[in-house]
Amino acid sequence: MLYFRQMAVKPNEKILVADDNPDVLDLIVQQVLAPQGYQVATAHDGAAALQLALQSPPDILVTSLELPGLSGRDLMLALRSQGYETTLIATGPRGADSQALQAFRLGAKDYLGKPLREAELVASIDRALAEVRLRREREQLSGKLAAANQQLEKRVRELTTLAGIGKAVTAVTNLTHLFGRLLDAGLYVTEAEVGWLVLAEENSNKLVLRAAKNMPNLSAIRVNQPWDDGVSSLLMMSGEGLLLSGPALAKLRAGQVVKAAVAVPLKAKEKVIGVIVVGNRSGKPFGERDQAMLSAVADYAVIAIINGWLFQAMEARVANLQRAYEDQVNANVKKSAEVDRTAQQLKGPLQHMRATLEPLVHGQMGAISARQAEAVHAVLDRLSALDAQIDALRAAAPAAGPAAAPTRPLPPNGGPAGRP
Image (cartoon, rainbow, N blue to C red; front, side, top):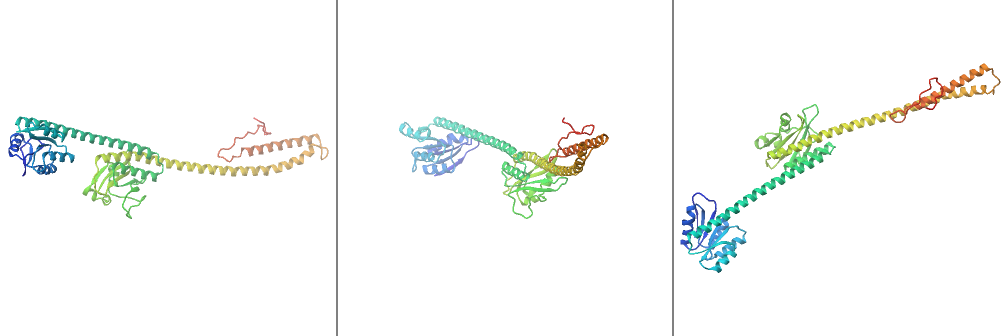
């Protein structure tokens, strides 16, 4: 026979009493446990006790060692083999030391001799209950400590992840690659399934999709094309993050892609330059912690995006300078060639005039008067000065590089230049 009694108010501990003697059951249940309001189950044989213990494990089992069918020893052994932590109190003949010793070896916390004495029974159950409550408190504290450790480990992982994200994304200068890395980071810290990143066009409110992860294969979804999900435009105006799910999200175009979403703005100072949105197709909701983590990624994103823009501007500036340098080099080469060609054209007649006059000075074409000789010498000196000026002009012509080579100035009298 098997029956269960729910007693009035008080403790939460459940006690199972197994004994084939109705008088013993009445003593334990009606006189000791019932007045204290414990939840009590009783069984008249070992099989019934085992069935009830497996269905609803008791905190304390008070069992006779001599039960019909499945004995109390077998009952205790069966519970221990199943890993149950029930506190066991065995009952048996008074003075039967061998049975008491056997009960303790099977895991019993106490052995009570029959006929049972109320005071001994109350003291034994009180000790067992104290142990049960202490074990329960220890398990609760262990659970709280484990939960706290898990939260702490999660926070450490989050901080480590954010630090790694910061190092990774701020070192990326290719914007296409950068957008993908940022979106990967957003999915990682929020454990989301789907995500996209949009930026506002410069001098325009138009939003453009710059990156997408795990999006459905729809013809309307194209990277670097105008984008309107119904969420991003709200954040562009408000500058505040959003947690969305259920009917509120279903009314927006983003609700066609995900059933739960978290979105944060990308803010450079007070200006919103874009939005990151991540979501779950399964409908698993996001919390404030997810929004905070995604906001941290967004802060890194703004730094990285601005760095990328500055790097692109710097690359464009370098390219312009390189083109200007090459244009200057080409112009210098052309000018230098023109100067050299002009110098050659000027030197030809000068050399011809010198070759004509020098024989007169040396008397190779007959004697000339002193006055004529002086005039010829003056002309030759002037020719030498002109020749030196042509050499100086050639030296002053621009070199192949953008900076012209330094030149030596002509002497004040227009004669040949000397060494500095």
